[in-house]
Image 1 (cartoon, rainbow, N blue to C red):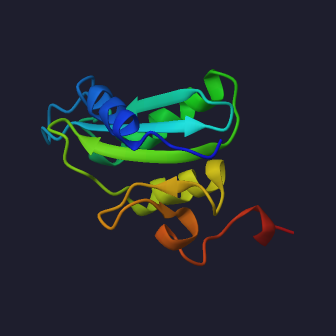
Image 2 (image 1 turned 45 degrees about the vertical axis):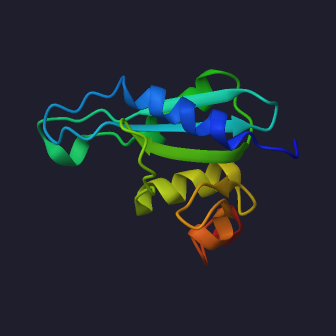
Image 3 (image 1 turned 180 degrees about the vertical axis):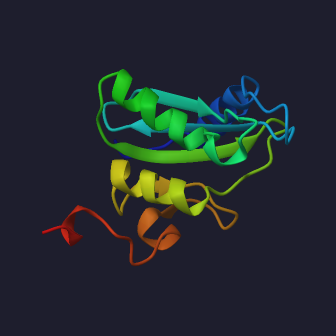
Length: 129
């Protein structure tokens, strides 16, 4: 896959954000990704009264990737329910790096960038014995 329809990907992230469970922060977050086989997977944040056990949108999207056949992430967009660009937290950057590798493209304020720039010097499978 060489061409990413970023407008479609961003719209899918906004749509996913509408399904968020966020009674505490009120921040709806959606993530959408293109998979190497052309599928589109999405996720939304799921908060919890015990704040530390909430799930980021990228985490639920990672589950959808695995539940729908696996593969590698090619491009990812994260958006709020109102369409604002949101960057993944550190934990989610690590998850995206694991499932997409250093060449997976991430939508950033400066435009699409590879995960190798979004998470420089990432810990990955090559660091394990």
